[in-house]
Amino acid sequence: MQIITITVSAIISWALLSVVSRILLVNFDLDPWMFSFLQLVSGGLTLLLIGYRGAGGASSFARPSTWVLGALRVLSAALYTAVLAIISVLETGIISALNLPVVAVFVWVLHKQRPAVIAWVGHAILLVVVTVMARRLESDLQLTVLGLMGLNAMCLGAMNLIAEQHPENKTATLSGRAWFTGVVLAITAALFLCLRILQGQEILTQITAPLILSSVIVGVLLRAPSMFLAFWAVSAAGAQGYTAAISLLPLFGMMFEQAAVAVGLLDTSRFEVESLYLAFAALAGTLLIWFSGQTYTQKK
Image (cartoon, rainbow, N blue to C red; front, top):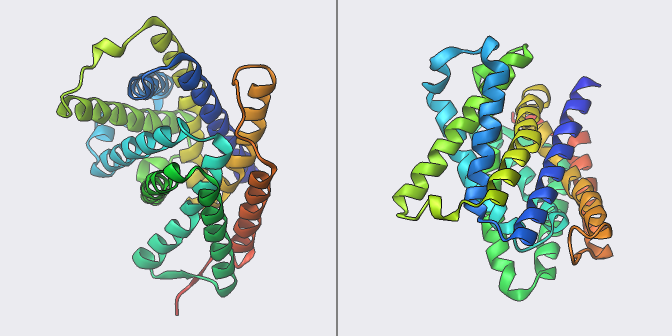
């Protein structure tokens, strides 16, 4: 029961973060890069302060795998934010169904574990759902969204597999988990900044009071808990189990987004009942994979 609670809480937190971020990006025309960067900084510092008593010390910053996690988080955040700015959370979540087939390929190649026979049907359903959803988008968005979300799926798949095996993600203490997650967010923020500098782009010119205020609030109240719960869920349910649970993201995202439209926080809704059917189809495909012997069987 604890594993289910942690995993579902992580998905709900991500869905709420996605919707709140879309509201702020659309309504206040915030710079997406600076918005994400300040979130990472504020969220990371919050978790480091919470977890310093269970800290692994400076050695936490010296692990190469932690820096790889940070780099993958940078790429994933940039790709996901770019997609979120042009389509809805429900649509983005449905296309995120790519994550599970990508993880299946990674596990098959790296750990010599292949999907069970019935699981192939589930993966086929997910790929069909993603294809249908992509074809429902405006023609000029289809290839862009598929390309960005495909890269995002590879980043998330690699990140979840690394996080599952990371020694500091196996700690039993909440303070230790907070410290580890804070370190990853701090490294991610540092890499964000380095990338911006290397691109030769201005940093301070995009900073405004609404940007700082909204970014810090979202970073502390949503970004930090989302990452904390996500890493905990990966440790508890495994990379495959957590990735499968992401199929719930579009459903929670739809509920939050429609609530935002109802109260006037978003002017228009991209919701279509056909998208809801696709979300349930993705959920069905995921459940089929999960029930087929806990997703994977050892290759003989």
